[in-house]
Figure 1 (cartoon, one colour):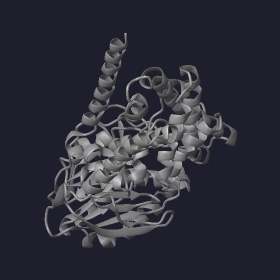
Figure 2 (cartoon, helix red, strand yellow):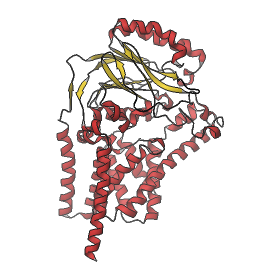
Figure 3 (cartoon, helix red, strand yellow):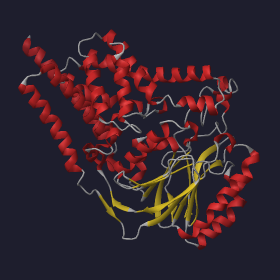
Figure 4 (cartoon, helix red, strand yellow):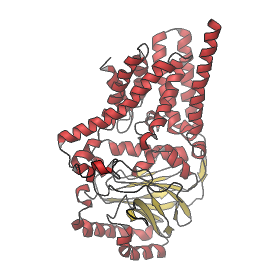
Length: 493
């Protein structure tokens, strides 16, 4: 049991990018169901924690790269902080397992539907608790399977629900082995998977015109160790200037997060000829850049639209330690990792206006923000195009950037919008409204990724209503199972 629990957690990582072994996620849920089938609540606490340790230890241990390589922590300290991070996240699965065994498993249908419903509620909890860490959701593994048809309706949470339910069906079928039970579980799985295949044929959105936008995404591949070195600023500026001959050829040019490592107000004179040129060529430049606010000690990680575009967006969901330091008065200066460059940003306000790119509205998301399903849905349907910029250099040659790309694809699919993803060193990508990659860059090279993006009209159910209808349905399902148990108990008495 002690080995099976973390192994089951690791299987989820294998189901996601870059491994893409999607059946592994279903097998993980089947094994997890088996581990929690007959144990006590106290045993469930331990098994759930081991499961979570396997999941997060295999799936997000890439944070070691940012702590050690770019945070200048020693190997021992980086290993300790990474292990502490993964062990802390694993506590949520410990709580999940306890709640399941103590409250959900005894309910009518608790081992079938209850397991899947509780799984989704805990993924949703993880998307906002303590600012949220919505990473490694089960549903991301199915961006290219039949289940993808459910994403425009219920988002990644619907895919997670069906994956977890498929896993519990697999376990219960193995345990029962009776013809009637096998038929029941087969019908449930076939209906959900077949329904997804049929839903993939629905056209939720349609092109706004026959003429797509010509777009260019510049990936500079600037070394993270040198990016904030003042001596490198002339080289960085020259590199971006060298990419500008393309400005006249494209409707929209995208530069990555913090493309110019200076506050916008300090470098604005350098931008002036670029802005003028973009206006004359009817082009919009969208770039990430730090931005000084009007308040004292108010600094933002921002995106600005220039040329034929206009607007400034300030990042709302900041990365702990990378963009702000929790318990700053205690931790700041303690070790180099707590003094990373630009780690004193302020969060931007909610309900910021979309950027303008000529006549089109652009919903911007900076790095980590694109992994929040609800945050993206709230602004996507008021926009014509989605743009996300990132600097995944912090995670080196790990699986982190590829997981990040997979989540960006899901946001495009959920909301029925093209998405442009511009990064410092890859993977930059042009993603269509079905979550399919039309063009992508290689990692760790300087390149200009060119292609076309289509503005789409209409919207998806998930884009209109977000995750709350599905979350409410999950709570309602648990309530109904609870009422049924009380009724059956009274009848038995």
